[in-house]
Length: 155
Image (cartoon, rainbow, N blue to C red; front, side, top):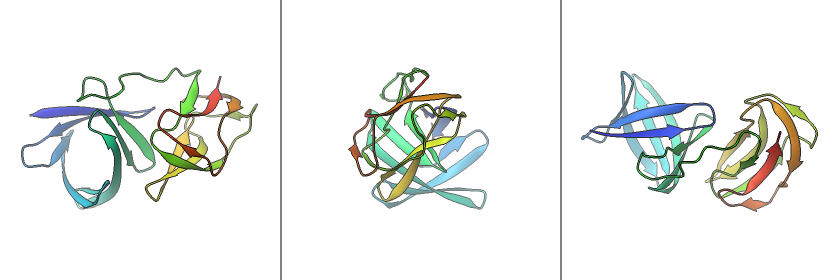
């Protein structure tokens, strides 16, 4: 069996890729149905969600239920670097900045949405990875950003 790990700023999921194309996470087995390029229906136990994926096999980004995951190091390629919690928050994929919800000097709580991006006709909330203060804002609404582009810096 093949295994991959995807990580967000707050979670890590280990997924087993089954020979029949399904995936297992814990005790649940999920079916995957591609709806169109980059958009998938993931279902198990009568519940289904939509998931969007972008990038390459070596640098995969997955958006599911408001969280952006990236392929972990040693799991088929990928960045292998964790963000420094005092550094800048960066764009996870090519996107357009739709809204900046904070100002420089503002105190934010972990998990609070600070920027909203739009990619592949979906909104991607960028959340604060920890409690802190917004040091600088490096983006503005309407701006096109590429993966790794700093959006704002927290301390």
